[in-house]
Image (tube, rainbow, N blue to C red; front, side, top):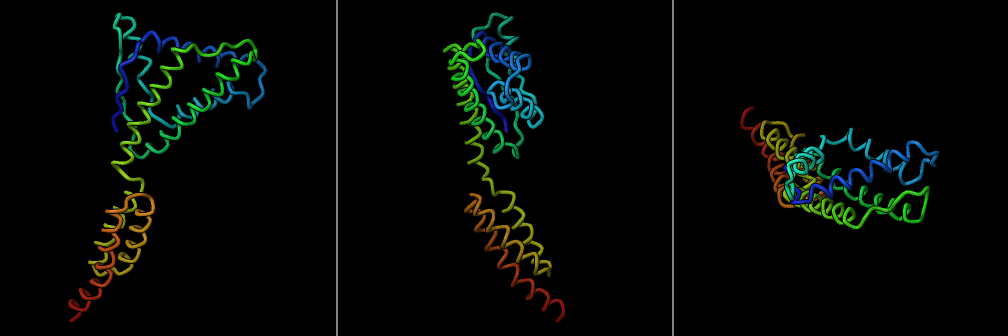
Length: 207
C-alpha cells in the first residue's frame, strides 16, 4: 500500500531527528542498563530497519529545508503483508518515546525531554500513518489470504478432488474468524458445494 503523510514543517522534522539521534548516541556511550529507554529505543529502531523498507522521510524533509520550502509531504510504500506489523510498530514507537520523554524529564543522565513542537510532530506523524494503515487493513481483511485459498481449493473440489472442498471449508472458516466475514462465507459455501459436486462429477465421468 501507498502512504502519504504531511504536510509538516521540515525544520521541526530535523529538530526531531537530531534530538532522538543525540539520545541514541548518549545511550551507546553511557553505561546504561539494557532495559533503559534509550537502549530499548536503539534496539527497536534497528529491528524495524531490518523489517521494513527504508523510509525516504529524512531525505524529503532535508531537501525541503535546504530549498526553503515551508512544508514537506512524503510518500512511501508498505507491503500489504506488513500492514499489521507496521500498525504494531507505530504503537510500540509511540509508547517507547513517551516513556523516553518521561525518563529524560526525570533528569536521568542530564538528557533533555523532547520539546513540545517535536512531540506534536511525532504524534501527528504517527497518527496519520496509523489512520492510513488501519484503513488499508479494513480494505483488505487479515483473513483474506485464507479466504482466497478456500476459493481456490473449492475449484479443486470440482476437479474430482473432494479433499480440496473439505480443506476449502476450513480455510474459509479461518478467513471469517480473521475478519473476512462475507467472502469467507462465500468460500465456505463454495467449498461445501464443490465437495458434493466432486462426487457427482466423478460418477458422471465413470458412468
